Amino acid sequence: MKKFVFIIFFAFAFSQISYAGDSSSFFKLWASNNDSKEIKTLLNDQVKFANETNFDKFIATYDKSYVNGDGFNLDTYSALVKEIWETYDKIEYDIKIKNIDIENNTAIAELVETSYAEIPVTANMDGILKSEANSVYYLKKQNGEWKVVSDTVLNETTSMLYGDARFLDIKLTAPTQILANTEYTATLEFTPPKDYIAIASIANDKVEYPQKQAKEVFRKFPEDNILERLFTANSDNVNEYIIASIGLTKAAITDTSIKLSLTGFGYQITRVNVIPQNKFITNAGADENDDKDK
Image (cartoon, rainbow, N blue to C red; front, top):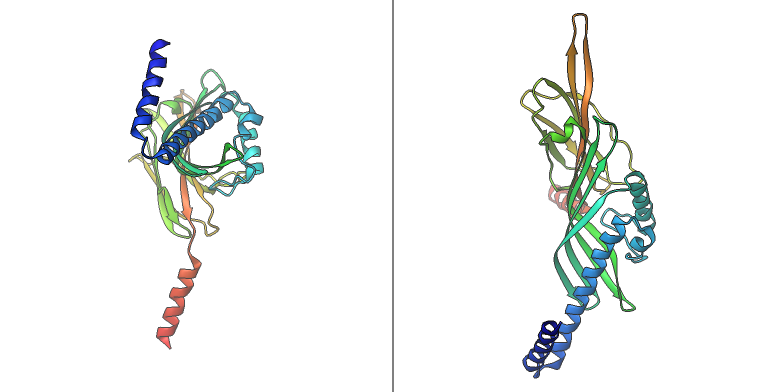
């Protein structure tokens, strides 16, 4: 305790000497450091409340004007949180704060967010949920209190794997962002266990709530262990998910029949952020071409 007091005294004395010629700079530095601590506390409290599934305290960290990068307002986001917690009540959340920039009463925080859950189904089909996202949070200080007013997910991957699929090394690739109404390719790669038959599908769906079920077209996984699909980003300027569905079956052969049994299944999901088309530029370009033709 004495050492702690001594360090505080020394730091305060050093600050007085260093900033004696510019008290306003000292105040700005002190205020910025204090705000940074408050923002870190707020973000870590979010994790604490989420792990406790304390809905009221968690939502209270958001401003009423909140709208996220997917266009969800606070009411929609609240409904989504409730639904997730009712479905998976034992998700473990964590964050790593990479950077915080503060300008007066506004701030931007860069985070890495992770979540993990074990999903009991049956003895042979228990599942695991894992998710990781790089996110940017936008905060505002009002009435002396910091609140989250928006956030944007830069990139995100989620896996939900059951049974033997838990042990697969799955790679799902797609562009992290794409211009609206533009073609792009999604690729799924993994090596099925020996003597297993693998089926898979790749679909895309808009990020919306309530979420619609993506249309799945399963096919036997190619021998080169790579499945590709070509998509066209939606023209509604809505972000998308690429969803890979996987199934593992094993054959039990007898003298009279062949029986296939499902030994594992799962989903690998990645985000594609859709960049809105600038219709003004597009129309301007069209007008220029019309002028040239005249």
